[in-house]
Image (cartoon, rainbow, N blue to C red):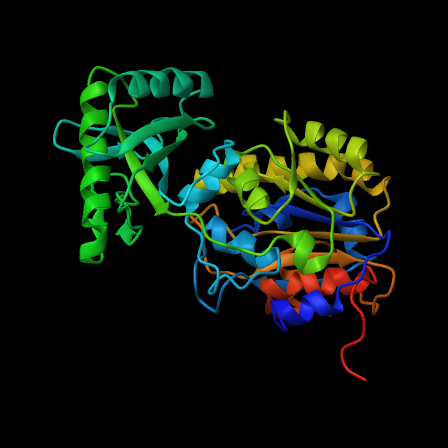
Length: 402
């Protein structure tokens, strides 16, 4: 990426539409005796599209670095993820519609299950229903109270996820997560990395202890994990950086938060891929950049459920012709990061990417998979450069220099 200031000078407006579709965590590695989810899935529409497109692989942050969803998406939107470190708590908060102030500290939280010895037996409390999440958050808000001079409020998300916002003076975000990262391990509490963050550390840990007392008779959600505790950053919006009019279509709060952070309008009220496509069609004349997010490919990867991940890819493939009917000038289908089902987690493996635009070098492709993308004409490159490619294919970047 040549830098934000140069991009701002080169960006030009025209009527061309760019559609970026993120199949979250779709990248995979072969299972024992089998292929990746993309290789095992029946995807005639994606495979046909690959034959008309350019393929490659992207590195979300850096070689060998496993990214969180935040930096992986920030990179795809064309921002340097090493320069713009954005805590996941901020993204979750923005995603559920919380307007953060400079005094606010936001945390992404999971309801979880803890045994009598303080061991975490389920990091997601069985993915409790969203309605149950809402009930528990109401209980917490009704009983928590202030912690010293810090106001505390929780906001329900989807399934086991919720948001905590601490509001008060002197809260630093130099903190480490309260999450052991694996089941079967002892619970963790927040730790601080410098003296300035000790107040925030103590506040967050008191919150966890009070929450455990409030939920002591609940099952399976009787504790929580706090992650991505952060304050809101100052970041240039896509309208200023690229001259775009952007819209995001996503079902999960965190991805709406990511989009809102960089200035996208948010399509609300969608809960399935089919509804996302319907909303895309409805709004297609109003914007020149669309970000559409498909979540379940990642969820099933994290669950180690290869069969369901394959089915989710096949369902997207079945719906793909409806997207192609809109005929955007530039179409990109990729992933923010890989989530191999055999690993049950995010990984450092490069992501498959497909770009179709009006001015492309031709290539032969046998389909859309990690192996096909490895042989693609785009090669392997950093995800933060994807937006430059999409802008160029759309004719939205002028010549650099004389």
